[in-house]
Image: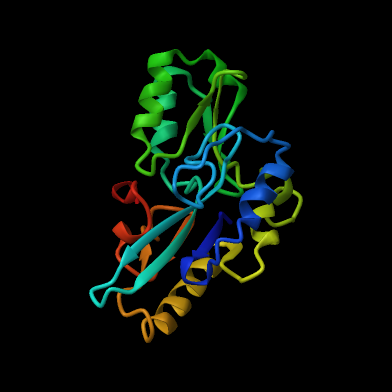
Length: 219
């Protein structure tokens, strides 16, 4: 059965344990960044950061400051358009594992032209894939495929201290998402699930999507 994540943003404290655990497991190097007026670091996803906790600050109508945190990553779509676009250029450059539902970039990515890469990146409705100039590969979250294939949970989920992230069989995760949503409606009346029928990384938001990050239109 396909696997799925539930990401309950109302529990996220922006500890960034998931972000660091992802870098550590994938042996990704540190990158130099600059202060840009936000605690979000680095500024965006990149080949060395496959998961990024996004920070968003806004004021309510009664002038209270609210911080929302969004652990961004590949959604491992049920029907990934990135794969469809890649298949038109180099079949097999992006694959979908039938057992886990993970959407994976393969070594065939190196056969893609610059125009192919641009088309794939542009096609993603969540603005996720990045291109690594050094390796000539498209990069993104791989669902910790090596761990999941051996019965382990992804490192980001393992490292989360607040229960923000849950991982398991898709049917069970969908049921848990609905249970949490129903409970949260009492304190977060605007809460909803993002694209639960279309993705295997289901986000539970407490507010409208524009209160989470600048790429809200890609959610």
